[in-house]
Length: 238
Length: 316
Image (cartoon, each protein chain N blue to C red):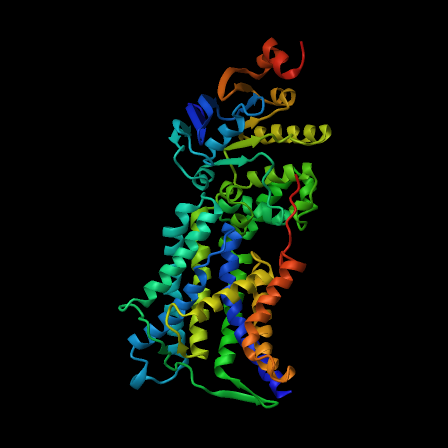
């Protein structure tokens, strides 16, 4: 059984249907990526998993338990952490406070928190130098790192990443993807939404291609990267 | 000089009360981005609950004998009742409208305000007669400095407000619940992704704000024992001035509400004391409200975000 099972999901925003029968399954320990154009339903799928929107039909199971009717904070408690599109850091909080907010569900003592913070900032050394700085003054790449670090502080079993490369310089994108792989190697399962398809397929084990709210393709990442249709439509090759 | 110091004393005392009420406006605005116009009525009910509890306990009329423990008991009960009321207002009136346009919520707030006033006027609630708040605190003058009487009541008002504001400041900036409140204030969706229970946090905000209003209501009734009937315009005006205090200080900003409250107290009290003497009687103390509203206009013109408010710039 997969860690996350999305089955036949429909989501509506008012009268507009954003997802049509989307099914995605994410095995424990894997990086799975969802690809597709703007408006294909990638972010919506993540928002449905983390409880920010309620599906109109279908179900989401985490570890076998249905979660599609739970409020977001209960889903975080179960071990899913969502780094939303645009990072969603708290600009007026310091870096330290943002990290504390990330650890909110774990009710740790100060000492435990510092240990955990140390564990996470090992991946992002730049954050350690900026703990007292308001998060709004960080650069885009640093904000993205902060958003991921903050998500890790809830000790998730499944990390949802929504376009972590968005708006970042190519060099920073490389760093972010290296860190994503490291996080995965320490045992965290990752569901990654990306427009940078090249990087995403490089990092992921499996990929889904979404179009207009439906899954149109699903395969191993290497096979998708070699697929002519994918290359033509999304990689601008061929 | 004596007039000056006496006025200053009054201003600090009244200003603390405005600050206590302003905190409720600003906290709710902080988390939900709307003005809870029923908040002034919660303050009014805090005063009336205090009256009700005091008479229920037989601490009025013949049984009256001022004591600080009694005063604290009455204040605590009034705070508990208003806390519950604040919870219910949010739960029943505002939560169903969480995702409705802001205008709907604003109109609802005015509706809640009218509901509270008119329920308070019912025959079996508080009625339409003015009452006199029984004396719970001895009218002791603790000291006379430079001709200014420092009364026990003023000291308790200022000290009590400071303690409550200190507790609130700690709650908001040093506790887990406060972290949740501040996170929700930035963005409820992101806060929920951190595992914050947004509904519970909003409830807590209403409860805390209403309790502070109740404390202000109690202290106000103690200082000014002539209790106007629940729908009397004095209450609306007091609530409005506390709201102005919140705006002047920077709405959504807790420390701003404290500063704003004090500032309104100063302007109002000095307006009362000095209008007539300085204008040779052409302007009377009745102008105090005009000064307060003029300050509001001035702040809105010069620094619309308030004294301590900041326009937040988001990085994309």
